[in-house]
Image (cartoon, rainbow, N blue to C red; front, top):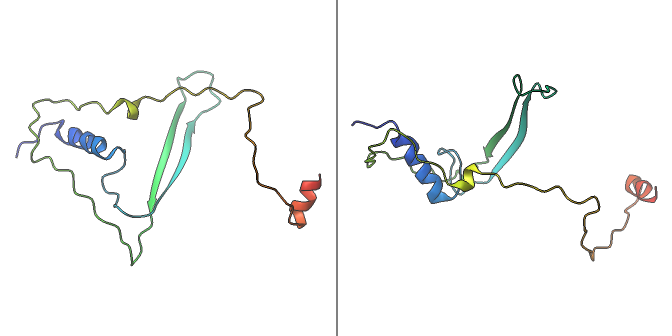
Length: 130
């Protein structure tokens, strides 16, 4: 079978669109999954971007058990791909565009709460009194 250069990438993009999520294709379904996210900095004190790198590392951890090993997802299928293009289609804008964030005001509005905080003694009680 002749596979075009962009077929695999296009099928992966279609899966992302169908599932409304960007995640590795080998993750199992119906399984408790946690994530660790951290920044990646190389030479963060640089005053120019010539020798620095900023990025984000994301690790996903699944927690299978004997009772729940999860469900294997269907593999990416390129057998029906009929692409005549050597390029990969664009991901949806929601995956590639980051909305701007506005810093909060110096004195942000804090909503009222009905929770009554009661000190429970020990270190918390001493800190609460200070």
